[in-house]
Amino acid sequence: MKIILLHLVAFVFVIPAIIAHEFAHGWVSYRLGDPTPLLTGRLKLDPRVHIDPFWTLLLPFLLILSGSPVVFGMAKPVAVDPRYYKDFRKGVALTGAAGPLANLTFALAASLVYRSFSYFGFPYFVLFPLELVVEINIVLALFNLVPVPPLDGSRVVTALLPEKLAYKYMKLEKYGFLILIVLITVFRRAFWAIIEPIVFF
Image (cartoon, rainbow, N blue to C red; front, side, top):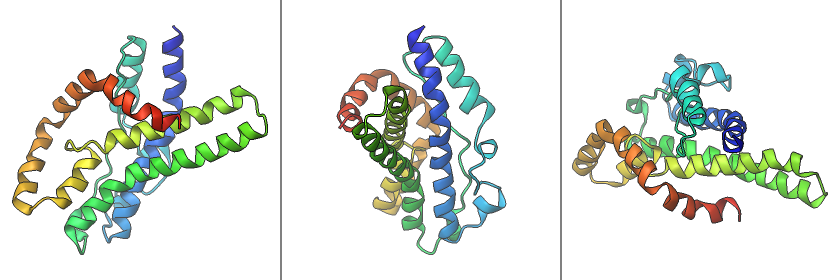
């Protein structure tokens, strides 16, 4: 029961993290000349335009209640059109990297506030939410940098590969969800062992 309650509390802090993530994708794409995020109403911080009823709410909630060791979900992906970019490959890489960078910025800001509050002796019930914000945003950033299509890391890798190889690499996207399920299930402990020192530095 304790773990379920902790996951439910953490879930509350996941929402602003994924909103910042998706907004960043849209904002960078828009700045690179793509009007699609604006025309589709995604250049907002309003949760209603980013939350998907199934992927953001129902699926994670069911996984939490089931006691699953793996909780998975996502926001609505922001639609972008790379054809508007002056430099296609660079634009794809920048737009892809924007989400994780937004989360890392969020985590850094929360970490600085945490350290300031801790220095002045604020009680733990004030510090705990800040810990969650740091942890959630770092996990979200690093997970999305895994180079498996359609995760953001794959967009950066695509920009670095030769064109023919990049095309073949992106064909993996149709298998991406299955690959992610396997990676999450098999390498969950290894992933946490890598990021734990970063989260609690």
